Image (cartoon, rainbow, N blue to C red):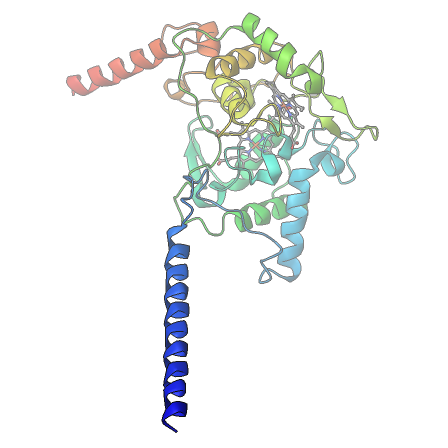
Length: 338
Ligand code: HEC
Ligand code: HEC
């Protein structure tokens, strides 16, 4: 009896010890799990575009319009290009050519800040512009085309898509990674001769020897969009200003090789290739109605008249620092005079 009790005690103690060992092991494991915290890299973007897969709240007509709006951004030429099925009002490019991944890519000229920041005052028109006006600016300049009727199903769908994309951005806010990552000014003028070498080495394989791009066999759309010539953006477009072109290209070209975090070109190369591409022939837009107040022109606005004494060439290619410096000095003098 005593014997049996002792061996029972022994078993109880044995189980207790095993129990404690397992418990300690478990606790240790848990705490070591906590220690393996992967430190996240600083995010490239504070904005994540909504997804139609997870968004099941947007339904019916609304959902139809978001999908069609996205399709119009992605495949603009199919509907509105020279052989468009809806109307023929653009040059064959797609909005997505310059607003990557249907306007959702961080630093890929995305649309995250559109719904949150429009209507807004824009100095070029000297008016408060709504989203329709801003979209039509790109139709008339970047797509060298005609404006879309605001009431059309196409414009309303683009609007619905842009609104849906920006639904989580608070009014007036601009997410980190919205639009373009602007480059610092160089001390010298951008050089088209140097840019030509960069173009030949890094761009020509896709965009063509004469910047003409590569059309799809269907003849309706492009595999690689043109950078100059008849079917490219006109000289009133945002990309015709080399600050915009260099910023876009630095973060995004060569396509799907360069990213904002790991670009393929140096800043200087991006400025120089911008100067080369924008010194080639392209469609002209009458811009005599732009800039009601010419003192508000951007430093890199390539067409005069200006209120300062700098030439059109310097406003187009730089160096921009002296222009900027003169403006600051003038503003400071004004303040003293007050
Ligand atoms: C050739 C290039 C190009 C094409 C094609 C293009 N855009 Fe743009 N778009 C730009 C540039 C450059 C800007 C100005 C970006 C900046 O100033 O930061 C811009 C700006 C915009 C903006 C304002 C963005 C903001 O945050 O203020 C909207 C909206 C827009 N585009 C819509 C469109 C639509 C819709 C299409 C197709 C119909 C289109 N774009 C086609 C180059 C292009
Ligand atoms: C691997 C092929 C490839 C290379 C190389 C490449 N691009 Fe592109 N590029 C593209 C594609 C594709 C698009 C359109 C993206 C889309 O529609 O999603 C594009 C779009 C553009 C656009 C905006 C649309 C337009 O036609 O105006 C510019 C500007 C541009 N590229 C400039 C350059 C420059 C400058 C270089 C050289 C530094 C370069 N690209 C190298 C494939 C390429």
